[in-house]
Image (tube, rainbow, N blue to C red; front, side, top):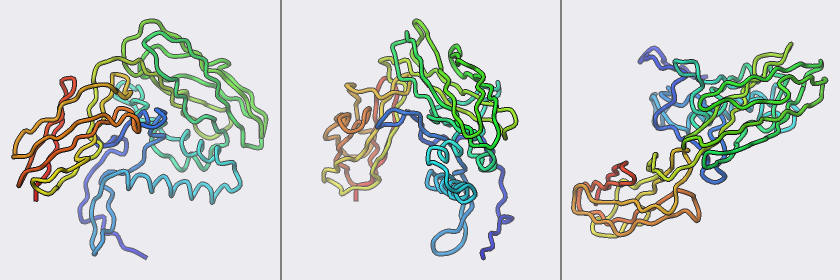
Length: 322
């Protein structure tokens, strides 16, 4: 057994706030909806190596919450197909809303905050768990089918509504599905637009099944691409290097457009802000990871501050030459 002294350092945190350092989608490799959902990962009070307790933050702490929830779910409801477990964890999440009642961006929260109690009780699942509707230059016509499954012992009647965040809402046909016990049914999301501005257009499909527990949330997303750098994020950077020696892969950073999609073929600049270091090379790594660029530098003795500049945005990273 363990005794956790929670009373030592009480402090308030909103369970529905997204940490500014949390990664957002689209996913780098397949440009899909990521994250699938969010979970507690900020100021987690836990034991630390060597003894004592600490408040820690990071995906390394939110991911174990989801993994543990999945273990509980599989133990409580054994024998289901893996796609049902996936939907039960993801689509029963609680959507995070802004002050106006609109969902936060899909590429920041996925379906919402983990809700294990709802996952244990739900009897309807969805496939796929999210609808990535691709990208366009602003004019598009989309039809995307999705399926609902009834895992329960009784028939279910499901109403599908739409909670848009940005852009005119798509339509779903049919908006009501009658699903036999153990059965499945298809619906189609239909969406079209002309000359929309670059950006992310997204929201949630809300599935409410009469006689079933809770609601399902199915995220949908479409990106209208542009050529403007609207996001610059340092993915990785070294903190130390040997003074006077080349430090390869000193920093990796990602450029994205207004839709959050990777921007390749750009010419970002990396310069020295302070210290006696030098920039050796800046190149695209898009053949492996879209939108990723790499900087090679040579740090001087002591602290060296380098600045990445692209499209009017800047980010600094520091390397100490030893």
